Length: 236
Image (cartoon, rainbow, N blue to C red; front, side, top):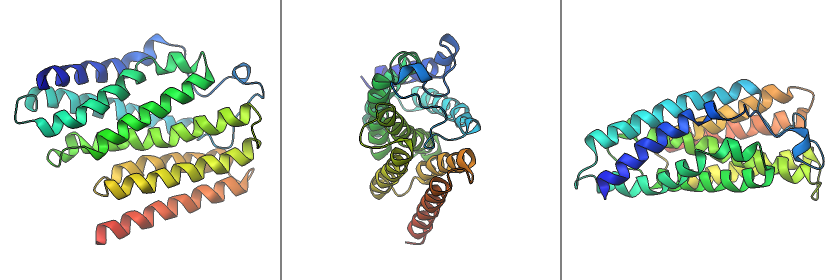
């Protein structure tokens, strides 16, 4: 069972990385996907920030291939336990872009499930081989944490629920920070988790600059909070 799970993880990591080739490009929901079109919503990072996916894809493949090669026998139960939620996340991730280009609501539901699976995998990550499991999964989980809140905020604003895009941007950034801090309490040895969320927050600042200054300031405060938390954890 351990070897089978390792093989499935490797196959899904590769499939996840190549899946964008078989779908239309996705850089956010199109205006016709939501009743109130969300064109460049303030919660969405600048386009360049999504380049982080290249690092995530490659690192997850390296991790999964190493795991199949070196951590697929009966002594690898620590890897096996962490792989199971990761498999769920990757399984949903393979068709995610196709889902996102079809339904904004289902895109939000599925990316939340992806994030939950990735976070569970991070919390269960083996203590050994830090750079070959914990680090890539932490980067992946952190980006999904940010992305899931971007999706939630965009969809709720797009349906005009309670607030407009500005209000939901505040909720989205705040929600991502709360989840980030809660997860980090469970796995403070994974600074890569914060790194990808900080990367997303920088992208939000670049996208908003002074045009939506409040959002930029909130993102900057979030960066400071995560950085200080990380420094404090390293000193403890």
